[in-house]
Image (cartoon, rainbow, N blue to C red; front, side, top):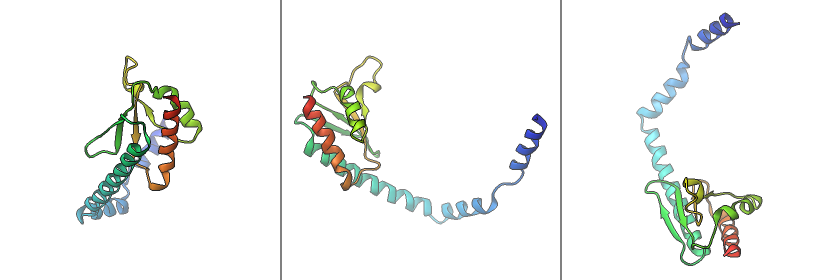
Length: 140
């Protein structure tokens, strides 16, 4: 069995996919990748801005939003009485998710915090932010 496996591994590594390598080389050499990165940055920046605006609009007063520079993840600090770990199962049942703050602590801190991703956010997904805000208000 080992010799057959070794032979198949050798055959699969014998030749590299030349056409694909040439296409990627052309894409990189002609600035395609840089163009793609600029478009991604614009898209994620817009989505992050839209998500931030929705959080500010719907979440409780006193909510603090921190955005990673150059990223699309947001750290949200809610009023101290909110436990995002308790809200999480209800959010999942409602069809959306977030990262409860307590998972980022080895001592159970940040229970009133959560991390949201703006990577897939759009105006049509604003309902999820409102629904999450409703859950937070109901727990507060």
